[in-house]
Image (cartoon, chains in turn green, cyan):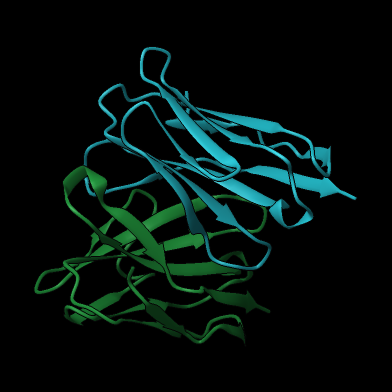
Length: 116
Length: 109
């Protein structure tokens, strides 16, 4: 299984600032995924980070708010820009490994963000 | 209708009990199915994958019913350490994974 290092593990930020979350994988992967999990809720996909092209954003998420970088096949960053208290959440990066329909998704430990 | 639906619970069961969760999905073309376990303040971790009719691993059994579009997770001889949220995850045949809202289980001493 993939080993994913995500940092920071937690942060407390002021309104209006930005935070960049890093995700490092121990093997090369085609796609990396960024999720948000708000308190008491399940995971919502923010975007899919593809190496060599722009990220693909899900409905309700935009690049200006959540810019993503994917400089190589083992690393990605997600920035939460111009933060407000509504952005307080857990942010998770994930990758898939496997073959076709038997791909399994693995997660980083998450970044717990609190915005004051 | 949500793409993946689960009863949020909580399910409070005594140690040693057998408990079952169901999860329904809306996309009949879905290819693969997973149960993940998520402990409080932790990331989801794969518990079981289901590609055909079912899968069994120790005290855990997952079953797939394609005709009725649901998967189930059965936990036998519940342990205190089984207390967690169980997420049903469906791959509809694309690169995306659809997560249910999770079912909370609390095993009581």
